[in-house]
Image 1 (tube, rainbow over the protein chains, first blue to last red):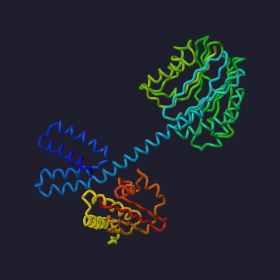
Image 2: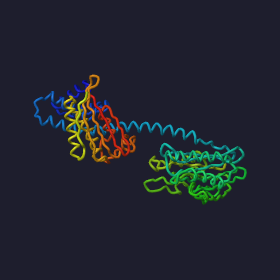
Image 3: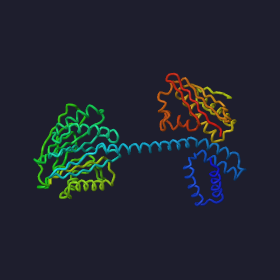
Length: 333
Length: 133
């Protein structure tokens, strides 16, 4: 124990023993912070206290000195708990740095390029609830008038989900065709996930392929949240559903596919359950709420629409995102 | 040179005897109250581990004198089942006693030097030293 600390402690203690003011207690508390910073353990503080009192009042009865020794014995485990806590905090800090690095790698690895297609306006927003995003978006486009998009949600979050996603990405890369049909894409990815991922991990995925020439959107779903279709002409909303098991459940799963023709101003809104399963004080967010938010901005660009939906839903949930949030809008210009 | 004495650990009361032996030696060597408390806590923890997991064993206390320094060496030896995953028991936040014991990482912190040798099915030998400053 450094001598200047002992001397300082004795002085502060002496002030307080002479005069029990709040000011003196305040000084003492500030001093205790310095002790913690210098890694001085509780048992050492008591030992220091005993020594200080011994110098100030040497004629106290033995029972007082014995009681201090007893208190020192009592404090040893508290001192150990403090040291353990500090070492765990350090470990936590290291893990945080590692997670940040992993999140960066994930971001780079899973980067996807928004297709640029005449007559199609695309909006995209994907916000992770924690560091690692469990939602995954993959665009396929090769300048021939097709724009494919996969919206996937790995059930389970964080690191394991991120690792699983890399696999989906490489599966999609291997297909490498914007013409690929949803039922085939889902079938291939299903077999990859089924083979490579342990039984506790499932992936839901919506795959849509837009053919700009025919203005036709063909889609399929593997147990994923239905997409929303907005018809500009009638102002009506409906759901785009397609039957299919979650990816990774059975290698024999088959996937349906359907098509719709988009008219000017029509929109297809694809999302993950982080959008619909957000909770407000009144309960789950209803689809009607999302319809209303889309309607409010229906004449604006697709990116402004997704941003608006996110901002409003975030506001309703007091800025506490429960789940990864992903929204993709295809709007026919 | 070294002086040695030991306590057989068979019952919970033997933990107290091991502490007493350690405290006497620590006091004799000139350790202050705080260090005496640390040394006896380490002995407690090691003796308790023997009592709980090995059933029986021995705590040995030696006085050390090396390069003009004096110190105390605690040896905890048993012929119990051994520790299957030493790395795990040396991790913070992992205590097999289920309670809030100091655990082996605690013993390591309380002392200056800590060595553990364990063989499954043969037993465990732990040596912890504290030097007088």
